[in-house]
Image 1 (spheres, rainbow, N blue to C red):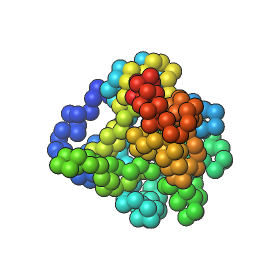
Image 2: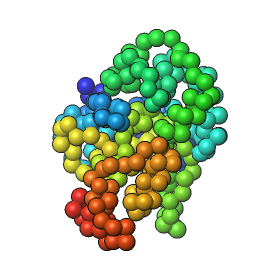
Image 3: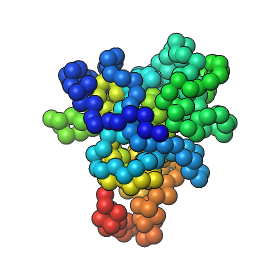
Length: 251
């Protein structure tokens, strides 16, 4: 079910003017969702899929952070404080991001994440679970230094719905940050039923660097079409092969 039509929320965002990353946008609606649904994906848990065709640039998610902090231990502490003040509903949704294998009834429905229909009492979460969930589901809120042309990470945030996005080195979605809000847009035209995928890492790295970053940071190695194509050729030829692969798959 489509929760909201996002075309687009710039009228809401414009009233805030320029805002540093992490600045609370308290007057912005906490969550707006485009034509998405949750499906189970083999070996990857839950994923987000479009329910109808979406043109390139279509806004799919606008989500304010559950919590913002600096990367690492500071974010874990901030999450712990936020959980102590959160509603039972928000606490249960945060805990549902734990990929350790336990089943959460209702969490395979997008409505469970986006409406008030999240039944049950406050979930019990320990410090180790918080650290595990933060490590695997937080987003580095990146900004571009226009003078230097470089990317810097000012903060990290927890965005529970956007955390359902799976990884690909050929992402079908782009992420943008504004204050404490995360915006997700279609990076190309998506046909109904296609999965919305983002890159967890810098996608301009070579195959070995990408696989090492994913294994160390997220505990898996990617098998997307780009990685499979690049893996077919000897390592010495991969820079040239990667460029050809990028052309073939439309990066």
